[in-house]
Image 1 (tube, rainbow, N blue to C red):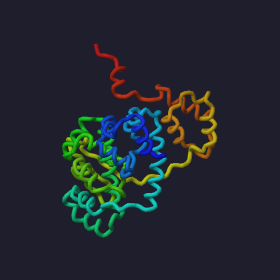
Image 2 (tube, rainbow, N blue to C red; image 1 turned 135 degrees about the vertical axis):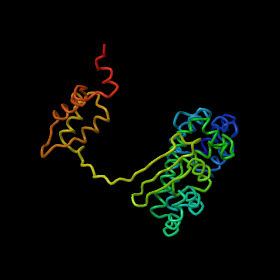
Image 3 (cartoon, rainbow, N blue to C red; image 1 turned 180 degrees about the horizontal axis):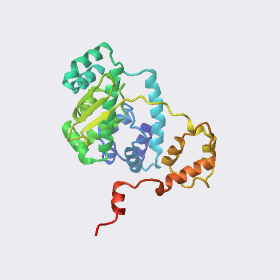
Image 4 (cartoon, helix red, strand yellow; image 1 turned 90 degrees about the vertical axis):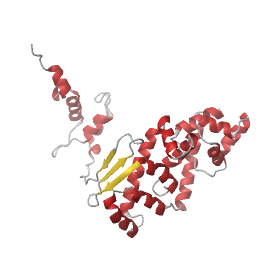
Length: 297
């Protein structure tokens, strides 16, 4: 049994129609119809607001639909991987280039044409997609923001919710021209890239993006040594008496500690943890120093 069959069975058992389910989930009737006809890919299982509303309306146990959807999506993604669909890269490319800083458009257009969907085009498209998705995820639960995006794209609120679901599940290999128009076009005002360092600046549209400028730098870093394999640290972390209420941040700090040609034991990490937690070992911040400084009479 798949998601479409389960939904259809529950609708018939409860005497409900597809449009009633669509109203409960706040999506379009055509979205539900396409799901039941298996013409549309299921929303990601982490779209809990969609599946929870469906489960509540259909009187199904919590997480039943999302778990079934996860299994079905894995099977579908495997099938698509074996026979991938072709994205409309030509039209998407033109829209991406139209947002590029004017003085660099000609140079980048030449690079894109010379290396179709090559390294530079993938970097740029991926980063623009990442930023657009991040903004959309933040606005997903903001009804005012979603309605504004719907007006910009001349769509209803319910239609925009469906379009958002599809966009958040897309990647650079399946990014369609429709999603580019609905999201990249209104959200991204302009972008620029340094072709020596691959550093990128992305300027957002003020009305739809909360932060105007996003800057990304590609920096070469030394690989971290595998400190988590340190025997003394493993013993320390396994002894709950020594590391009571230790936080993830504190664990990361201990893993980064370096010693010179010595193998520290569990007691060493215990003492380092106590030093980290003791406020006496650290300078107070500026606001605290003002509070502690004696007042002039």
